[in-house]
Amino acid sequence: MAWTDSCPSRSRAPRRSAGRTPVSFVVVTATVQSPLNRLVGFTRRLSGGDFEARATTSPTDAPEVVQLAAAMNVSAEALSLFEQSLMELATVDALTGLPNRTGFVQAASALFEEARVAGEPVTVGVVGIRAFTAINASLGFDVGDRVLQVVGQRVQGALDEDAVVARLSGDSFVVAQRVREEGGDLLALALRLHHVLAAPLVVAPTVLRVRTYIGVSEFPSDGDSSDLLIRRAELASRRARDGAQRGARFDLERDQPDREHLQLLGELHGALERSELEVHYQPKVALPSGDLSGAEALVRWRLNGEYVSPARFIPIAEQAGMIPDVTRAVLSAVVQQLADWRRAGLDVHTSVNISVLDLADEEFIPLVAGLLELWNVPPELLELEITETALQREAGAAQVAAERLSAMGIALSVDDFGVGFAPLTYLTAFPLRAIKLDRSFVSDLATSERSRTVVAATIVMAHGLGLEVVAEGVETHDVAAILRGFGCDHAQGYGFAHPGPAAELARYATEPTPSAWRPPGGAPT
Image (cartoon, rainbow, N blue to C red; front, side, top):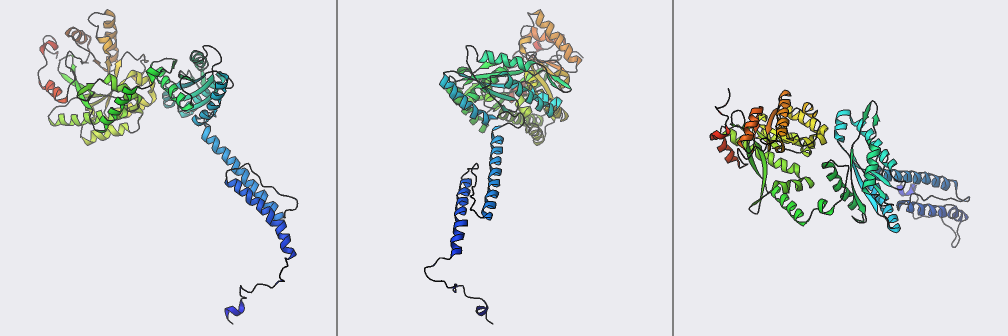
């Protein structure tokens, strides 16, 4: 039997009388097609993002239609909850339960509009926690997280009910509060927050005292958008942090880069890309003998044939977050120069200034190790200097990095010792090789009995801890003689030599030290 014989042809439709519609077709159309059209419209609303829409039914709908509508409503409710969860993830900080930056921008915009109508200003403040990295490093991240939660709660409790409080980043919060009375902006806000945050914070079994700083801007005088006001409050908060102040207000002249600043920043970017930064070296002298004992590497930048003072371009680089780039350029040049000197038979122990941003950079230590290996330079020839202020600010990150560097054989020394008001406990907490006496203590040794007492006591203390002492800013024979009498190990300053190119340091190393800078009767044995 053929296939066509066993299967009726599709063209053979059942015959029906012309002009008649079956009753069953009418029933299906009435009970199914109309409800289905409603459900199709509902699915279109869902596709358009209207997750609050719900499918409706009527008593005449078929049971299958009712079940389908109920299932679709369950899906719509799930989508609505999912959307709410996504909104929370996008606007709420999971750790503190406070709004995040996105949530703050949304809420603060509404607050600004209310204040605009009422003719009231709004204070926007960025609150930071001092030495928070040290809390994480010494007590653990669980304690650090709890500190953030408590600080967030205290900040929120200290402000008006309609104020907006949010977690801005790792250890900083942002607030917005309407100013309803004279003098109610920076002074009132800083004092209020300082008071509530100064109370002991118990994170069992630890009792902490959290220190904070705040920078503020004001709506509408400093800007009319949340993002701009946050940026300007952040600039002010950095000034408060670096100046050890409780609070600082945004100042256009001090915090906002001018045209010359921006032009210099662009030139610095170009200089880094073209490897135009230079490194000069200032000799360090062993005071007992007067011979060269090392050098300090100092960055120099020549622009249009003239040197730009580091006092001008280093702060710009810091503000722009370019210090790690500058450090990499200097380190690369120094390690290469150390290799060149070694090939010429000259080993010069050289120190390089670094910042806390370098120590916090995960790529910094591998970079140093890679450069030493590339140029076959012993790590003992390299020393890294960091100010005690930076060590205090980021003690946790600095200590971890210092221990890793020490394990590699690289020395770490404290620059500008005595001017950072840091607790002396860090001298035993860090694997240090030396401290460098700031020039402010050295310059008046010949005329100030108090300075001589401080310097002599510092040298005795440092030697007792196994640390060497380097005196900066030595410019006269009298000061050199006093330091030598106190037992100071090394000195540097214009009295010995100005910073200069590598070739000048090589000449200094091979030429006899002027007799005026040597101790009477020659070096002691």
